[in-house]
Image 1 (cartoon, rainbow, N blue to C red):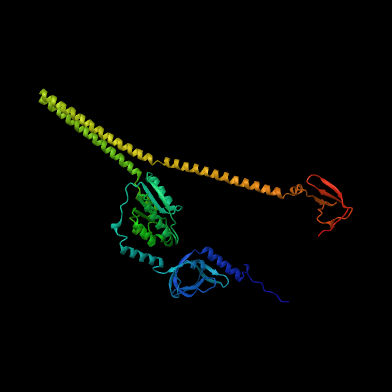
Image 2 (cartoon, rainbow, N blue to C red; image 1 turned 60 degrees about the vertical axis):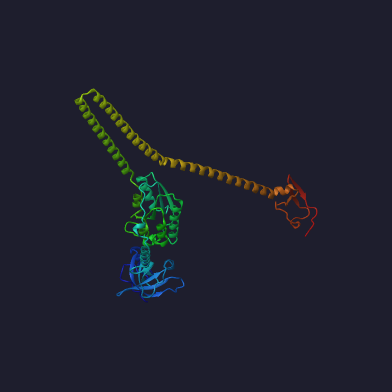
Length: 454
């Protein structure tokens, strides 16, 4: 009898597959995605699946790497043996062989980087052509009536811009020229939106940009087509791409660069609170000046009165009195005229403010909502009429195909004693009782003869 020796431990015994799975799950779940720089070795790109396999190494160590087809198809170049690269990857384990490896989702040339190199080359080219020169920069309007925004209508940037404009300068209307701001097709669409804004002549200033992101996300604003569209714009352009630390080609070409979309909204709009404060200051200044002039004139009048009293001759007194009355009349007329001018200016500003009141826009939107409701009601009624007509057609078809309609044309249904429908003469015999179902009523019949017809 053979005895099996039991392991001297209370711990569970793992298979190799279980061990590799535990290590795989530990690496996948606990280790964050990382950036790694190294030199490519043993590069393989001829797998039937389209995946790339290679080794990433430095002077002292190496690690196996895999870059699946959906990731490597995004690259504009094929890596070579010995090339230094920078990769973004997650740490994993190939369970079948127990190999530690990196699963790469992004790869670029190490050091300068392909995108960075393209960026610097285009920046140098446009700079040499003079697109960045201050001489071409246009001044921004102090009080824009309409502000255009070239950006995504669903992004965070447009929400920030509208929030700031509504707070600082609600008098200005805002027109959004919607465009994607990320991806391979975004650049020509951004350029087209800038061109459309210039063709329509609706805006006094344009904000072009988007929120933050990676270099790839912001890349459409580093494209030459966007830079030249901004340069060709007759409307002053404020570039607001990414965060404060992000600089794109658009920032250098634009008439003004804003560190963020919110900052761009502040740049193009005056602060209504400060404007009101300035108006109050001007009013206070004018009021003080008028009071000062009145006091000075009163002092002058007092001096003249004293001089008249000292001169005493009645003629001179009357003459000076007339001059005094005239001077007082002129002074009152001037004061009245100044006050009326200021009042007229105040009424004009108040009327202008009322014209841009949000109430008018809300009334227009309510009108549009009513029109859409009427259109929806007409569409529903039309659909119901179509369905009713179709129902009536189907009802007539069903009526035409009804067995009762066939019986009404003179046909009958023959059943035997068991209630089964008689379809041929062999189902009954002479003397059998059968029933004939007519359109109206039933006949009890007896088979007296059977004729076999083919």
